[in-house]
Length: 391
Image (cartoon, rainbow, N blue to C red; front, side, top):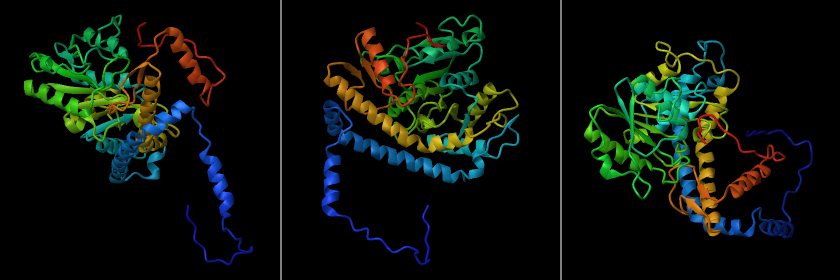
């Protein structure tokens, strides 16, 4: 806050002229202080060009977010929470949905705390699209682990997978280079293929993540075969990594988690679905119930403020994550480890994979990360199972 005053000073004016030799000495001593070990410092210095590119990306995406907030007329009253059915909500949901939709280039969006993971949001989107007798086609190889029981690829024990409801499933293997198999994709659709699923991120698989340009090319090929085939993009880990998002190149719906990129490390929970309004409304009905749509659901406490703040900060936080992937790839590759993506390769998501080579090294790496953390540095992580993952 800047305060201007013309009042007379009570105390005598102090001379603030710096002592040049002393400041020079301070600057000299600070320049010799480096928080990194030599190998990491050398790698960071060598990545200055890549880091400048990330800074430009952050500026571009931050400008788009700012404009969307202004167009949605976001005000402090939108940060208020609500309880019960959420019918007395102060307009924050509508403003947040409008801003988010503009940011990703979509007709509509629903951003809610009631989505408790990216898998949950993606599931609502898939159930919005698909009906008994339809086929879901995964065009980027096997989907993320947590979607296997949703689809019915792995037995859901009758808990209501797409397969349980009569939806068929098929997937196209990746090409040898880890990307989409364009030749196979050109003739992959069948008359009953209702939805094509594209996973933007590599997830836990050892493959390239897909750029938005590649996603746009795939959408064109799909729509050429059947203009009515709907395209759903799993956008997790991809938001703000590029200057454009999948709806800008023709995706009918995208879905993801606020716990990852778009929450800016601030959102405590939540997820989103964005795209064509008809299908966003259908996904909202799956989240809530037909007839309730986007107009119900409480957001108690400071959740709404955290959503707005996190979304505004997201481009900057994602930029820092991208720089981290460049640095990890550079350092680990120099040590002889296999990395994916390779050092200095343009990023399409915030995932950086490293093959450590043994279970022991993996556990040691996880323990080192925990020891270096600001919270829980005194604890030792222990391997265990996680819901949705099959080991």
